[in-house]
Image 1 (cartoon, rainbow, N blue to C red):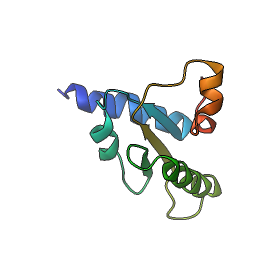
Image 2: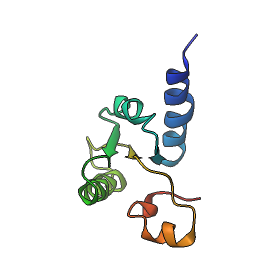
Image 3: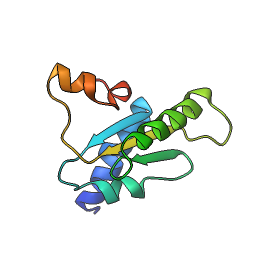
Length: 104
């Protein structure tokens, strides 16, 4: 029987990626950082916004461009890991550099 980590990885994160191709994970407690990084492979690109701020947004834009172009060898799904609380107010959503990748 799989543990909670495998359940979250397979039944939550991977299923959501399959459904929408892009998943933004906000995690102010840094509980899921390693789990998200474990998902990285040739079909799932993982952008970790922990250390590089705006550079991570640029990386996400580049990966997303490859994703939508359907280039051979490009990832089919994009997971963006953000180590902070998700925006709650409209102003916070407008100011979030990753808001283009998620819907409420």
